[in-house]
Length: 483
Image 1 (cartoon, rainbow, N blue to C red):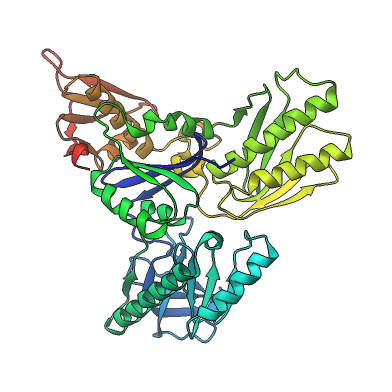
Image 2: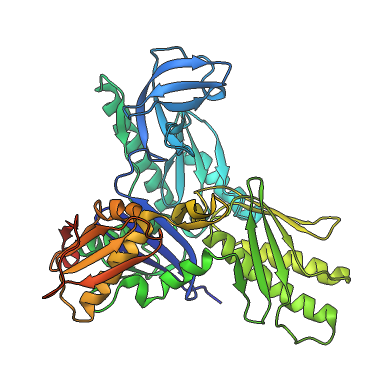
């Protein structure tokens, strides 16, 4: 049965949030801040500042505040002062380190990736049929441009040869334009910025059935992007008017995000899963909980384990968990049941866009798997170490709490209250609020309260006899209806 895959886009002036739903369930949540300048996939003209063989790296000026980091195995012949074209590979884990870059350029299209300087052809590992793989490889070799390689993406198996040829030509033109721009530059800087998150998802997501955005500004661009890259599919693009309800509220997204930040996840059968993350790996424990169905203990264990495998596959995508993952399923004695569990886990992991390898059950009965790291885990994106418990727990970040406070103000506006409102909150939340926007037609103040819990805030409607708190500041207005 075909999966119903929907893309919800919550756009604000400073950030876009994207939720991918599969058969109505949240499968992935992705965010991108507009203020981000160090972008993976963006292409730069760089100048080598220094080469440090002891660190196995060269440090490259790309026109940003911090020098970028280039592994030496990609440029062993580099010398200080050399100019080269590089591409962002990954952000570093701390604010004191620059962007990790690569000299191996990848220009991604919907069906093909162009790799300038690499005269080779590769087919996505997710194309399993040997005959299809061979046919795609042969055709890609026949259209491969001189001096470039090609990577054939999974979605290409359902596309005509004409479309693949056209996309290769467009990618070659893009690469030529980058080279021409670099030739005219006298100092390091940006050559080609990666597309916005919403456009990348429209390009990369296979099997989309519907795209819904709360941005009038982006509505037309999304429709044009879909017509360009998914002409054979019927994908509807809809504008969601937030005057009566927020887009993520309408699809119960916020509650699902909150559940994805919790350690315990309940299963429909009554069992539950516990997630524990440490530096080296993530450990998952499966328990039968309230489950009482089954002919015997073995049958009960099998039912819970199979249901848990499906939910674990969804949760590691949603939580964006990478690296080594060990799952302690309920013990089963029968070898046939153990094999069925491993196969179920492999089947459930196929929907993941990241590379997942299910190694199987260890001698101790733990299911071992790995997932390629793509982004920071969801818990690290939305939470910070808790200062109230010396880092042993976590609370929502000041920015996330500030956004939730503003979402609540917008809900009050929808319910008919017109303010003015004052948000009283912790210092960290106050600082974040001062950098965000409030609805244009409501006056919203922020007031700092020393000692307030980092996740707690109060929203008061100011009226006669209720003075404005000392030190309150007015938040910048923004028209969400014009968004």
